[in-house]
Length: 79
Length: 210
Image (tube, rainbow over all chains, first blue to last red; front, side):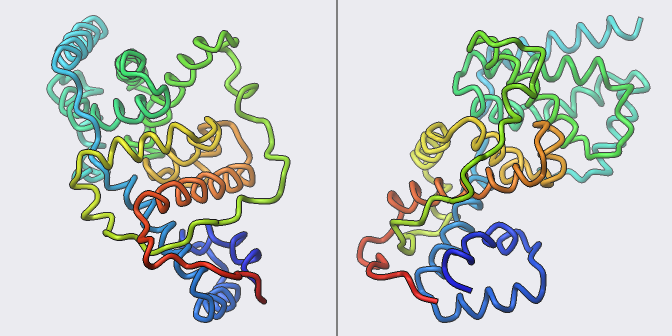
């Protein structure tokens, strides 16, 4: 496996969805290729950063408006 | 999310039976997540508010249809994504009826962008998320992606939908989702590493070997 082939398999590897046989070849390449190792780390960190980032709080006015609208609709639907 | 799928399902059941408090609890649980997704898809605060309200109204109106095949979070993410795409299509002056027309286009070029700036990061993601400017930066990086790549990344990697669920939500083939996801991840990696990478530990030089 060369670097380009590794790149093509990157998603499956990072998501743990790689075929076991391919995984072995993948990791063999990784062990001997520092740039590829760093790229794999970077990708994992990138995903983690987005996944674990704080969500935006709702603006207070909008929060009230949303809950009012939903309460009203909920009550209408119950009738 | 700290709640489990079972907790959500119990709340949905109670809301379906007419208990407003249960529905409000679900809304409180997910409103920030939906709003954040909407902000990242539309890139605008006002649009994000409209989308969030539309998504929850739509979820409420279709609550009876929720059978729990997917998690409530996934179900809601699909509704919110469709609401956001509708807003974007309207803004672009495209017909809103066909989601397909705007998203189905195949990735033609088989090649993916090659990593250029390769370096270990100066700090871990756990350290980075504690800083306010990080969110601004990562959202700016996200905004620079093509919409088709951004959507796939948001649904798969941020919202945690499976490849299959992402494909179904965007009406794409799974193969197409995978290609788009790889491009999105590589592009974001490039941008984030340029910002967070340690220049001292940059890996340079030839990277063409077997």
